[in-house]
Every structure is written in C-alpha cells, then in structure tokens.
Length: 64
Image (cartoon, rainbow, N blue to C red; front, top):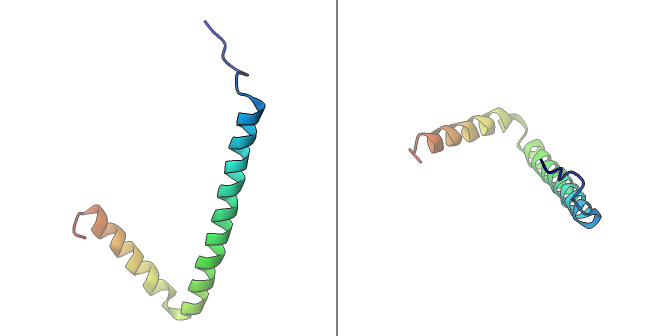
C-alpha cells in the first residue's frame, strides 16, 4: 500500500487556511448584519422566523 500522507504542500495548506479564515470573516460580518436587522424589527422577530420557516417548508414541498 502507498502512504500518501504528507504529500500536501505548504503553499496549498496556507491557501486552505486562508480560505477558511476568509469564510470565518464573511460569516461574522453576515451575522452582524442579520443581528442588526433583527434588532430593528424588535417584537416582529418571531413573526419573521415563522415566515422564514413557512418559506422553507413550501420550498421543500415544491409549492413555492
């Protein structure tokens, strides 16, 4: 059997880490934006959640 562990180059590993860090930053920014929008809605937050849930269910049932 061939052992291919360690065949990953340093540059490739750095690129993978860079992409993961970039994804983490994008997720943090999107989280801040969504949190800001939801704080503006105030008491309508449960209603927005129900609408999103209904849209997902309709999408899965091919009714949308």
